[in-house]
Amino acid sequence: MESIDLVQKLPTRLDAFRRLHRHTIDHREQFWAAIAEQLQWQTPFSYVVKEDFSIPLASWFCDGQINAAQNALHRIIEKGRGDARALVFYQKSGHAHTLTFNELKDKVLRLAAAFHRAGLIQGDCIALNLPSCPEFVISALAAAYLGITYLPIGCHLPPSIVAEDITASRAKLVIMANSNAYEEKKSHAPTVRALLEDLSILISGETIEGIPTLEEYMAKADPSGLEPACPEANHPLFTVYENRLAGKHVGSVFPTGGFLVQAHASFDDIFNKTLDQDKPQMIVNTLDIYKAPAQAYGLWGPLTNGTGIVLIDEDIRVNTIEDILNEQPNPALLCPPTLISEVREQLGQGQLNTAKRFSVIASCGNALPPRLVKYADSILVKGPERVVNLWVQSKSGIALLNSYPTPELNRPGTLGFGALGVEPIIINDFGEPCKTNISGNLVFSQSWPAMPMATPGTTEHFKKTYFSKFKGYFFTYDGVRSDKDGFFWFMGRLDDSIKVKGQSLGASLIEGVLTSHPLVEEAAIISTQNKSGEDIVIFVVPRNKIQDEQKCIDQIKDYITDKIGHFAVPKKIIITDQLPKTATGKLFRSVLRRIAAGEEPLD
Image (cartoon, rainbow, N blue to C red):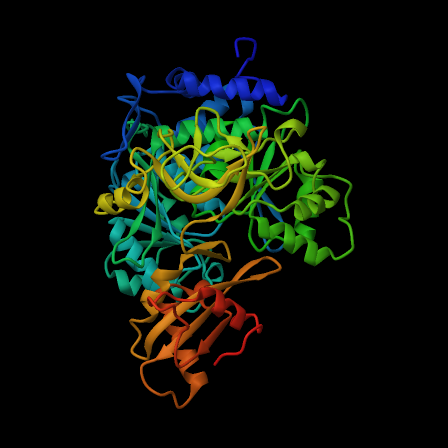
């Protein structure tokens, strides 16, 4: 490690990389202190980490104070990159709106001044019910400048859930988009406003009677003399809700210092430090902006590294990809695995109408299978090793496993290695280490800087869920194995999670929602595979005999839309008199899958 300059590069040979990784584990605190010092601290931290998984507690960069927005804007401008592209937004019209770091900073400070003028202070919370758009980025940065926590809320959620999220967060301001951003477009903003009564709401992109626009809110703001906040490292940067079905808003609260340090470092490691040339100048983010991975690799990670962000005002299409490749300087692509499948479906046997390619493609979600890596190599990227996987969970925030865009540090389908300074461990059900190529439980015995805290009132749930099965370990619920070279491979989920349209859905929790419907006695949910991911099929046992089966199905779909969101409406609902069960009362989900696939009759 002594001969490696970590500021400039990482080793690209497997043996050298593994030695470096071991060194960062053995000297973890020194490693993370050196990484943290690459950023600007208003007050230096006194010690690196304090952790105790029995509580659980993880506190990083203690006593330090750091402003995330200053590190993403002012620090980059001071390095002479003020006129570089910071944010490019491709609108549906095809027009690309560009902001430099200087221009983005001006807009951020103006909105921060408007927040300050309205009385918002450090420790307050605002909610962002916005799609991937400049307003989201500007609002998040402006909030961070003042030490205000922001809550991203997905535009796929119905008004009732949006209102519940906002109420649970105690947000003092809500910023929403125009109606076209929402899956349920009819009167979305007015409905949310009615549910929230007197709470301040701003609208971006169109005028709605009775709701002031973001532009009007900012009109009289004067940023001159506005001082940045000095939040402590553990101050919440943003909060993400992951589960609204358990009677509480269960989610993650990400700390300013730890999240910023690890987002900065992880982005730099993956997209810059293993490349001798073709380092990306722009990152095209097609992940859902309201999720932690998009915050890490589509917002804070790139900006703190001086890399610009590209956002798109629609589902990404081939012509948009061609425009981006032709118009943006050496872009990289951040995407879910389904995007590669969608591009293949759109192109068929064709090729892109450009010879340019992405410098790196980083896939976040399920590991890309080798067939899709091969396809991406032939169409979108400059070599199969440039297609990397990021293993990110809602409770990690950052990729704790990832591959790198270099031949010896990547293999099609792999999850890669543990991130630098992070040690993944594979144990069996008895807590014993697994040997090479033996599948087991993926756990971590130590925290990582971006590790979140539990949302208020859910600490016991957090402890029970992630720290109780294996004492002294954080349990991920993923089954993995590692090969002789140290690559990790995904073997399957160890809970009932189903991923549909990019959303992780707990089967048992959805079944609980369904059985609260007056028509439903029992319900079971299973997943089926399609070309781009998973679909869900629901089996329902009605309380009473059904006269009109289709009417019953429509009512259940409406109920799911209202209680969870339209994205969770299943491909198929099957009405049955009973569910197949074992002698002990457990569901035969394998039988249900065969029935859903038409391989077995419904008796």
